[in-house]
Length: 246
Image (cartoon, rainbow, N blue to C red):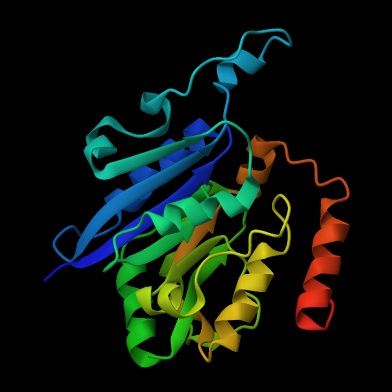
């Protein structure tokens, strides 16, 4: 029986990034082993082509610019009218299939062959894992995606797993729930979730034999995030919640 995998994505602008990551996941995931579906949450994007001119009119969300046509039948889309940041991921997680595991990546990630097989191998070796990340390259060059052919590394535990690409077993959603909605745009909510995972008695692991390429802050750049006072407020909230600074 194929394993059910729901790929949960959020975007604000960055339509081309979303299009590319969906192609990359689909092309590098074995359809005979995995039942792959996508959930896309859009944070009130404008069509980026309308941003060239300062006073250009707002353009409607265009599905064809975000989701490859051959994947649209396997994609559920949720449209927000404003940018809720990373917390919008809760909508994707909440609408995942109740018997699926979740992949929750940034939309600026490129995948490599066998990446998901190795994630599940890590889960088999460490059945108490509640959150798993592949090895991530931030090399700055797409050519460096070939690094996955280098000698493999062993799995290892890491207290903080950046939310560049998370694998979340269904047991974690049942035990921990979703991201804490009290955090403002894009800062510290991933550190907080890792703390919640460990507080539930689960572990956070790096899969040493699974590899993805991260295109260097493409998600944040396309989102044009202005943290303003949000970063300081999030850090203060985290410290109050957990009794220590980030």
